[in-house]
Image 1 (cartoon, rainbow, N blue to C red):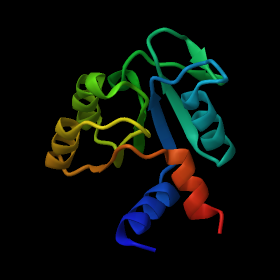
Image 2 (image 1 turned 90 degrees about the vertical axis):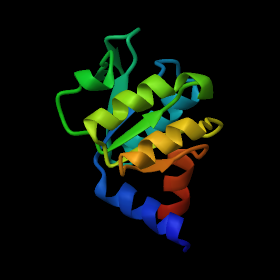
Image 3 (image 1 turned 45 degrees about the vertical axis):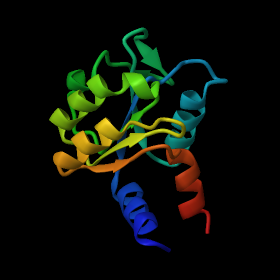
Length: 136
């Protein structure tokens, strides 16, 4: 196991609360599939989507700043060119990690997060990584 995998495994082992920004209530959407998987894997998910009051039985928040508890991981499902405002807000709540899902690449976001000393992953799926690292 390489150093990056060790970091991911330690993060996923020690984390309990994952805020999912851009979570959709539509079952066919990747964000929904990932959230459902994470719930089944024992995580508490907090949906962040201003368009809904509740997703997957959990209260939905308009912004990350509205969440009244500590968040371990901020998992972002948004277009690469739209993530900066969310990333800038995410660093203010000081999660253990900010994670940009598969297909989301933003170098400015990476620099911002790393400048705040927060773990960062991008262009990788938290569900696929969890399956790969914990299915052995």
